Length: 193
Image (cartoon, rainbow, N blue to C red; front, side):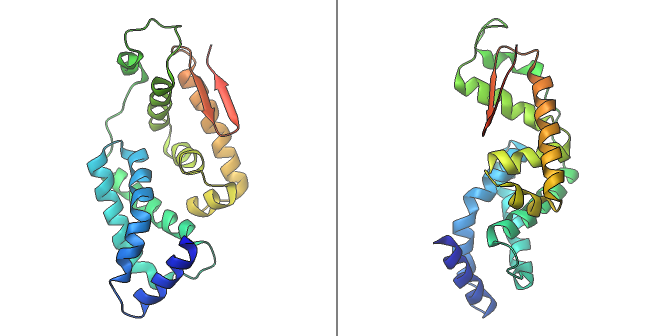
């Protein structure tokens, strides 16, 4: 179980076995790069952001109090690193209108295939205001529950519910004038048009 391996590796790192941190990096590298990619949409930058997150995780490992799951703590630190990185170098704003090429030349009103729909949704999420984008990414794309999402974002569960509700509403509005798409996020399914 990863939880047990994380605990053992944390103890080893804190006892001076720096090689044990490599095990932590191996387990968490893919999830952190994927999370970073959701923010920046650039694989190389996502890898750099994840590396920066690991530096912070290593530096703060002694402060991990085990009051929450290690995964929650890792994602919370990483999210802060990613936020800082995004503030330093903001993304070019993408218009959903630029996505017409993704429709493969189909006319508006024609249904998109699943892959095209997913790309429309991913792009729409990147256009959300930061607080909604972060909540949607952590909760839906990283499949966290409300408690974990609240801990990672540093807000209450009620606030997470409100952020997710407003984020879904904004997505629905952004996708309303696009070719027919079905936005399926967990138990919520929205259809435009």
